[in-house]
Length: 135
Image 1: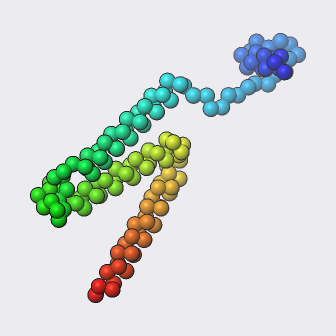
Image 2: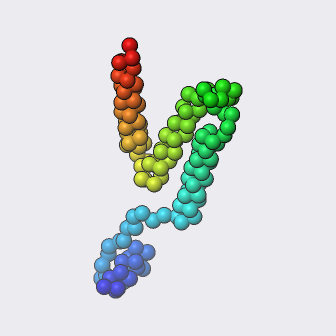
Image 3: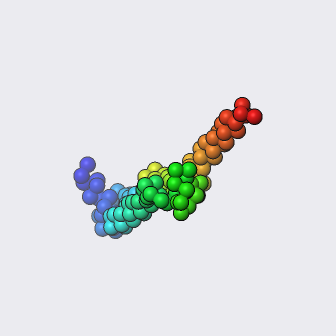
């Protein structure tokens, strides 16, 4: 068994003997370790920055203008919209890099945006129906 592996490697490099098997081992999925590590760290820091921004938006006093804090800098709806945008961006990174869909953009879009659109549609319907009885 080991002889066949040695012969295969020799055949791949053109060092095979006469009469040996001439098949070539094709290696799939070989990665450059350095580029994979750099990519993992890059994604980690991007997601860390997004998470820090989400915490800043959620926990900074005086940032949101609400009923309890009318002197806030930004309207509450703007802060919520920014927060949701950052959350969707983080979801794209999670699906793209950890579920390995970054090269399949259309599948990634369907995986994230279609459920999000259905949820927003459901929320809109519930809000319309919730105020129906108040009229």
